[in-house]
Length: 223
Image (tube, rainbow, N blue to C red):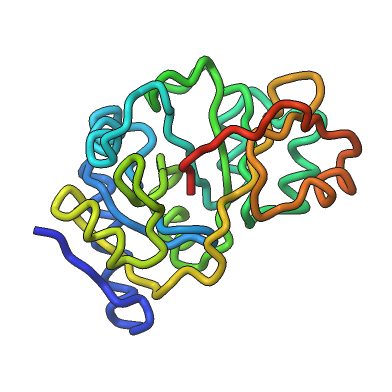
């Protein structure tokens, strides 16, 4: 049976974070608030849990799940390297609504879907999410909605769509600014914008110079 915790209450927040971390370790699903929209999350290193996440959303393996991290150090451990631009971008925009696509560390044993050797990483600017991530380690997290439905901006929205598929709902009230994260691909010689979002491309260019935007932004559902 699903449990829902009001994170505005200190006791419920503490109990909810403990319950959520335990659920993640057991390979179960949790819903967590982020600085963009609510996310449905699972242990990134438990393939069965990631499969449960995809099933809960009604989403195929052809749309691999992004990964949220609690620290830049954790992100560095997941990739070959952040490349010539990644560290500067992380320093400037993390925690925050910027998703970076990097070449994955090939020694990792995980299965996020058909990633083609890449991983989409983000460090969210939300105290509840960061506290959970620092306890669980990297989590596979996608927007907390059924595929094709609007992203959840409240825990209630998420629960209506995902129901008993999720063990723990961490309720932190309505999302303050439910604009999706900007997605930037760092796997090519020139950083390429894949989705316009909360971080304007002009801000990216102030940090790294040229950003390719000639391709149409791709829709996505990452948190």
